[in-house]
Image (cartoon, rainbow, N blue to C red; front, side, top):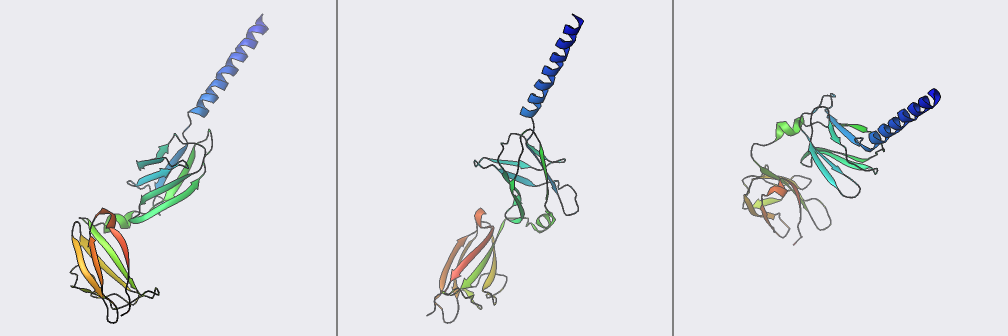
Length: 204
């Protein structure tokens, strides 16, 4: 009788252990993302975007100790830190494991972004002028002149930077001796905050 009781106790403990293990496997957190700077210090503010293979996207703001993404599947995920405007970092195909929490540390330096961010939205538009054979054209000017242009004409690589206040409209023409003028019409909107505009000029 005593031996039978001991067997029942052992079986009971075994059932509890297996049940706890199963519950732990079911409730495990899939991924923890920690963001640090180049000196291995935690970055206090950063946007994390995680994309699963099925297209599901999860966004979260970084916090001390890392951000937990607990409801993921088995397939690798893509992680993006920051935004495309400044020092964006992407980590592709981060592997996941069932019943095991994956921890990944990502180095992200946001200091230049915080230091250089303008107080008000400004569109920074880099014009790149080339001919029909994709050769860069220097000396292209704007007529009428653009007050927001950093330089009066394009450099030797066909580049000219123009900054436009939010909501402002740019109406001008790109001109260079020996080429047909090209009209330029742009309005500073949210999707043009950091923009490159390729302009091809045709020879006369």
